[in-house]
Structures are given as C-alpha cells and as structure tokens.
Length: 442
Ligand code: PLP
Image (cartoon, rainbow, N blue to C red; front, side, top):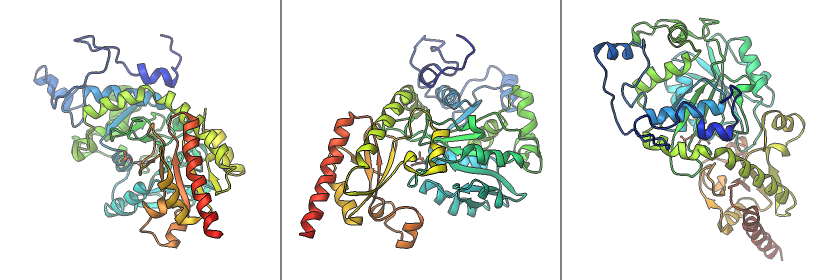
C-alpha cells in the first residue's frame, strides 16, 4: 500500500498492523482472553519490566485485542499511540492525572458533559487538582486564568446543550505559547472532527458512544498526538521531566523517545503508571465489541449527520418549537467554528426548546414512539431526553439556567434509521402536544 494516509473508512477496517491472526490466519481480531503472557526467559522478562523491550506482560496493562483497537483509534485520530480504558470517564480522569498532581491546576472549558463537571468539581479537587474554568466563546479567556502551575487545557469538541463547536486551534495556539497541551474530548464528533490536526495534543473518547455505536459496551480511549514537546519547559511539565520514583527514577519525557524513537511519552506514562496503579483496564471482550463498532463508524457518522441536517430543517419550521440548537444554527463566529472544525456533517445532537415548557417537554417524550427515552448519545437508534425532568431535575431554576437547559429543552440524538421514519415520529409527537396546548387554551 502507498504511504499516503488512508481515509477513516479504510483505517477503521485495516488500521494498525493487524492483518490476520499469526497462528490461525483468522481475519477477525481474536479475543485474547488471557491475564498473562509467558516470558521467553529471565532476560526477556527483565527487559519488558525495565521497558528496554516492549511486549505483553499482564492484561491490566496491555492485551493484543486491545492493541488492535488502540492502533485503529490512534490512526483514526491521526495520533501516534493510544490507550484504551474501562470507560470514557476513566479516559478523562487519566488524561488529567497523567499531567497534573496535587497543587497543580488545569483550565477547562465551561461547556462540558455533566459527568466531567462532577469529576472536575468533586473528585479532582479532593485529589488537590484545581480546575479553573474559561468560557470558550472567547478563547482568550483561557489565557486569563493560567499560572505557573497550569498543566493542561481541556475542552469538548461538540458539547451539549449549547452545541457550540470548541475553538480548537485558537485555544491550542495559546497553550503552545506556554507549553500547555490541549486535551480534547472528541466523543460527539469522531471522524467529522480531527482535533489533533488543529493543534490539540491529546484526544479522549467515550468509546461507549459513536465508536461502539450499538449501545452494547462501555469503554474509553486516550490518543497521544505525538505532536507536543513534553520536555520543552521542564518546570511546566514536571511529571515528564523529573525522575519517577515509582519506575526506577525514569524521566518519561526523555526515556520514552530514546527507547521507542517516537514522541509517545504521554501514552506510555499513562499505561505503565496509571493503568498499573489504578487498574481501570478495558476487558478484551469489550475491546472486541468496539472493534466491530469502529468498522462502520465512518458510514454511520455520515448517516447520523445527514439525518440530523434534515431533522433540523423540519424542526425549524414547526410551530410548537421556539428554538432549535445545532452547531450551524448559531450566529457569526460560533457558526463559523462549525465550518472550520467539522467536516462532512455537524453531528447528530440537536437541542429543541418547546413552547409549552416543562409539561410540553414531558408530554413530547411520552408521545415519541420510535425514539428511545434514554440518558445516552451516539447509539445507532434515535434517542431523546428531557433534562429538566430527569438528569437536571435536582437543579433549582438558577442552576438550570446556568447549565443552559431550559424547562422545555429536549435533547435529541438522531440515529441512522430512515429519515422519513425519524421525522414521522417527531411529527406525530409534536402535533400531539400542539393539539393538547390548543385544547387547553380553548
Ligand atoms: N465524555 C462525553 C462527552 C460523554 O458524553 C460521556 C458520557 O456520556 C463521557 C465522556 C463519559 O463516558 P462513559 O459513559 O463511557 O464513561
């Protein structure tokens, strides 16, 4: 094959080095259900443990099934190395713990998945890592809150409920002035956004969503872009520039490039320290599930995006709806970011605000027949949720407004069913609530 970089559709099927199983010639990636791997001799074992040689030791830290998935996800994002973990939450947690320790801080976008907010607010703060927030509508807000203890910037490509595309290059450029890497959660936009191409250093995914695609497995991944110099400013990145007592005094930023010939210190450190110590490994059976999902992710994303575009066109004309939230429905600079960062579609998430507020929101969800009522995104099936009566029901009116969720807000995640059937279901549900509100007035 030529050296030219393959396209996502091809990478998802052929990426990485796996062609067929070396022993059986099986084409499908085998599930290596083993905890451990036989060493050739004591020297081989010693070399593996001291990182003089790379190879399998124990499945908590690496597994051949996971390895195929990792190589394919890394290639899909255009990165150099990847680590898979037990959930998207673990991926976000590790991505920070790999650069920050007690006394350090990171600067995060205010537009975040609720689980990440909870992780940042409660668990990271208990570990002594401060999370400072910056509103991404103006990228300069990130620069305003950094200090000499800032170790990373964090953002989400396509965060709901606002669905404002994150200014990846703008924030990454600021970070690179200070040797601060940008970590992007690209869960909602695989294939359609490539954060590493715009300067991000690390990409995390909840594989549970579009990459798995079928709502059957929970997992996460962390891709090392190989495009960040961890040694350029030793004071800025102490975890990569000071001896690690837990690993015989190794200095990760120097040792890994020397050993591997590649700039993959971030991925290697995460694997051999965080996975070793915290143990949140992805089971090989689940890695197999993701390999199946990954094979069709590019195809599914096209269908998700094309369906969502048509749903937006339909919804913007409906009288029961006061507002449609979608990356391209924003104004000026924010809408321009969708053009700049998203290719071949604008994602499958759509927010709508219903005229009738909380009661209309509840009734609309109950009237849907085909859409599933679930707290999830990225499934092949169409999904809907009314946050004010579910995920956000504990919040008071003020907190609700701050989260961007109004009483009548409904989040849709458009699936890959036939577009006519999707619109039919939305139409019958919206017409039902419109009729009921007319009845209430008369
Ligand atoms: N990041 C985003 C954007 C998410 O939507 C989610 C889950 O909804 C996560 C991370 C966490 O992923 P998981 O549920 O796999 O732990």
